[in-house]
Image 1 (cartoon, rainbow, N blue to C red):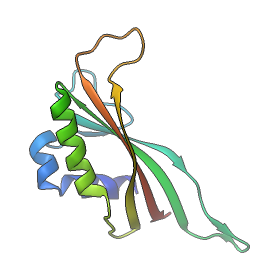
Image 2: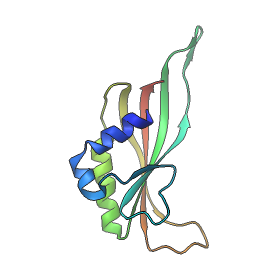
Image 3: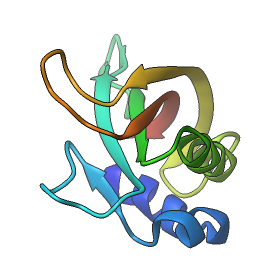
Length: 127
C-alpha cells in the first residue's frame, strides 16, 4: 500500500509542481528543502472472517505538509487531497479524506519557521 500511495502522489502533476519528489515516509531528512510531505501509517487493522484473514485492510494514513508559508502549506495540502481523495487503483480499493488540521510544525520547545497542515486519509486496500 505504501508504494502504491507514493506512486499515486507522484503521478499528480499539480502536486509534483509544488513538491517535486519530496514525499517521505516517517520523517523528512534533516535540512530537506521545503515544501514537502511526510506520510505515516497511524493505524492498519486487518480484517478477519471465521476462516481467517480476509485480505482486506483499512488503514489510516496521515499526510503532513510542511511549507515556509501558511498559504503554501494549504496549497500543497489541497494538491495532496486532490491526488488522493476518491482514488482507487490496483490493491487500493478506495481513499477518502477523513480529517484536516492546521498544526504547529514543531513540538514544544523547538523553534521552526515552518507551517504544517495535517491530513488523515482512510485507505481501503488488500494486504
